[in-house]
Amino acid sequence: MTAFKLKELESDSQPGYVLAEQVNHRLRRAHQRASAIFLDTIGDAQLTPTQWAALVTLASDGPLSQNQLGRLTYMDPATTQGVILRLVERNLVERHPDPQDRRRTSVQLTRSGQTLVSALASNAAAAHARTLEPLSVEERETFLRLLSRLM
Image (cartoon, rainbow, N blue to C red; front, side, top):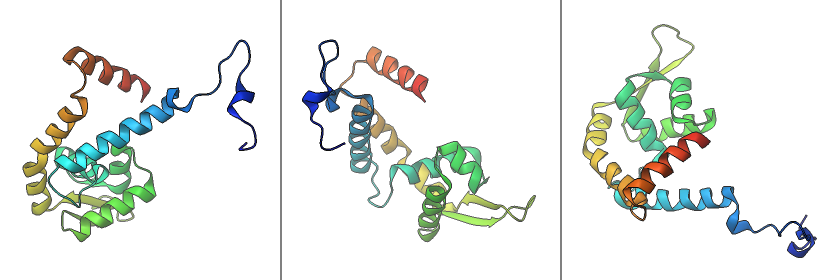
């Protein structure tokens, strides 16, 4: 695939493939920008957007199995496990055998985790606002609505 050139993709009826115009490329760049803003704004240098998603989900939904947490935050099982391990190391969540099914692990926020979510929620909201700042209010609503249709 590396041997053929962009010119070879062009025809009279079809323009060439331009990476900068592709949805996957634009979404990846937008994600990089949003993540950088989050990391700059959240106020905890060790906290990633994925870890924040897990913490906020546990704060709103209460104790969950690892599988439920992964499904609700759209993480694959390996990522979910890694996120939980890092949060356990920081004493932000704890794991216990699920009382209804000992084969499952239940995850819940610790008191430190609850305190952190409460303390940083306004920073997360500020990161959201900063990410959407270049758009008008109407554009923000449209953008978020269109993104939800793609998910």
